[in-house]
Length: 462
Image (cartoon, rainbow, N blue to C red; front, side, top):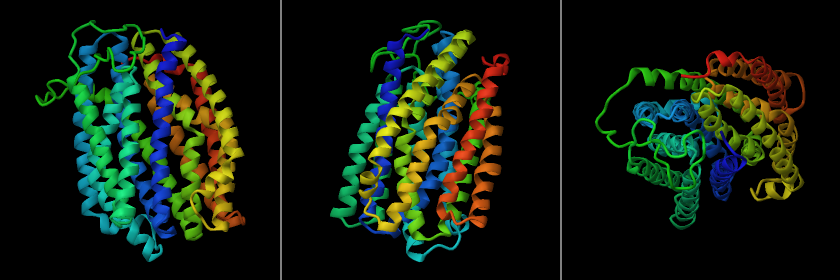
């Protein structure tokens, strides 16, 4: 169904998009870092909550993308467009509700989540959190529209928009922080503006797509559209005439809810671990923030290829070609391992100069390097089966299994072992990074066994 050229055209823009997205986060931390460790720590704490909420939107978007991809595989673009509209309705309601709740309870939420932290850190965190709540609807819509373009096999558009976000965000940060002297508020407003513009552009592009009927689809059978051309499988025309489709929404939520629970529990677990790290002081928080930002680059190929799996495997399943789905899963996994090895070797060689960009104190910088090395070395071997492979299972409607395994592994291994190491050893803030690698080993083994046993074949199509 997919040639090597098709896969290349799908994957390389996704890698570029992931790189650009991570660059935004890195630029935020570096530019905010000039305001001091309290500002870096405050922003990094709120970023963990933002990532949690973003993961919820991403999970629902994944459910919609899988449903759309399967309908495209069936040569039913009319149904894929209908599914896209149901996804927009669902995420819009969800994001506005979360934003309202966050604004209502914001004064008590951060102290409840992170406990007693230094006053200057809390002040910066509260400022950043307030603006982030106003950005939630835009972040949700950006996730939806990007996922819908990927479901069509068109990953270039979201890549171009990610580049736009970078330019706007870095320029806005410079203006807000260094020209207007707004501090953390300037960085937050810059993020709000860039995400809002990006969401609006993607929505308009999907709305302008001309609806098609029945099996009238370009590149039927799985080819990837080239750039901006022939991306007509999904259209949002007529979205203001609200027509809810309970059956399609159930399909979306059937994948999105387990994935959302999995992602949210994973991020909540990371926040719990972060609260443990916070007990080791501001230096530990800052080192963890810097290492986490760079660590995102270490798993960049796996994240990008995981997104590609949703499209490729979803279309194979929609077309009823389950053996092809299995073959492409292993092919994409091999590509992931090769890319992870090459990339991480380079990052680890230049890790110290990269960390020095953050302007951390010597002790903080050394701790960040230890964290980064632990993550980079072990991610080469254990990250792909833990996080790339389960996207194939999700595309094959086996999202409940990935949810159960991920939750058990997160809470009983990563969190449990983090606290055990913190109480019984002198590992300090490194305890969570050591526990993380053990978590990868467990969940990766579980997903590998599940896929090999082929139980997903009984539930693969919608």
